Length: 116
Image (cartoon, rainbow, N blue to C red; front, side):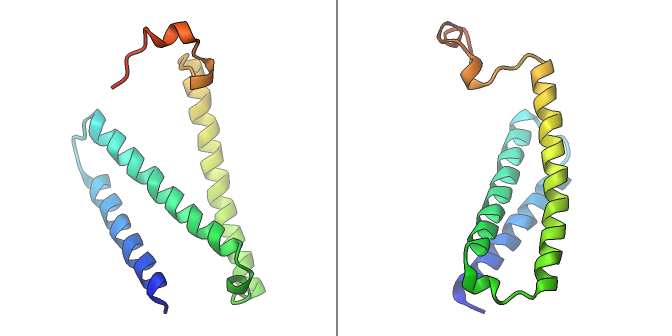
């Protein structure tokens, strides 16, 4: 195993341990939840970037069998469906609550907005 692979695995294990620790933490306030959300999204982003690197590297992909690639696609597709369905649900909820995206906020409205 290469040094970079070992570093990736070690960092991923530490990140997973931290996510599990935060998941078990009780009585999280709003700031804790936002911090947890940011870490969770960072973990997803980091993982997706690794998968994209792999998918864009033909030399690495030759090491996978047809069955391996089918299994990878099956698992990632299942995850993608679930995540995109949740994304749609959350976006619809945001819309129902009247929350605006940055593009929808008029310049005049910005003076009245308060950010923490």
